[in-house]
Length: 293
Ligand SMILES: [Fe+2]
Image 1 (cartoon, rainbow, N blue to C red):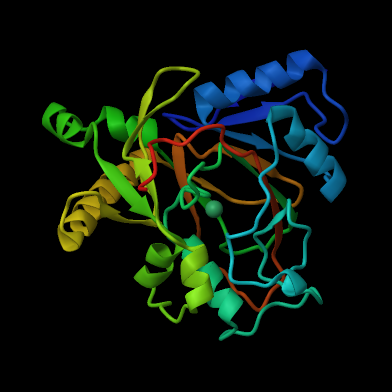
Image 2: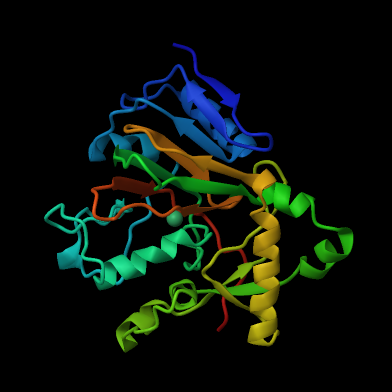
């Protein structure tokens, strides 16, 4: 088999064929996928019957797996999956959909907002890999926005204005935007804001991108409402249809994306149905800017 990548959207996203990612990969295949990630920012693999173990093994080709503490309100005892797998399902430990008013479900609804995974961590994530184990027929798509194309299409004065801006990111901001504001003191401490540059430069390609996320709730040195209004303007610009790909899931798809170059969100679906999605994440290797003392 020879690996092939075909671009399936005008500005980004590659569909990968000629590879079985449930088996150990040859170094050339890993290099081809890494190069594909640099170029397309999102890669789609289909027909990959991954288990947790084979998903972990495939993920480990691209770096160190991120572990979840600090990323959710669910306690360790409530977790359905081990700490190195992020649970993107709507299920509790007994594999049952959450009740409509379950606090964990309401927290997860933050994933309906455009975001970049782990932008609320001082060292934010590099790649995310999402495996569709049980998918729903209607809705539950994952939409992606190309933040390089979004940056490139800004006018020069906006580019100059945002060049050195630094944002504050926290899970409290994305959840707060949906009215999820009942957060304990312990959770507040866990969700303490971190700083991220608004403009990032990709280490592999040198391309610039807008580093936006629903987790961004302020710009250092700006009044909060002014910052949020501006971040909202930039997000609208970045998520206009020409920069967006919507992935309609089939069972056993694996979609891999570069959080440094894209945002994503899940679309609405019938949450009384089982949707079992499992994510592994490659940790980033550096902060985008020094943190506040
Ligand atoms: Fe996400």
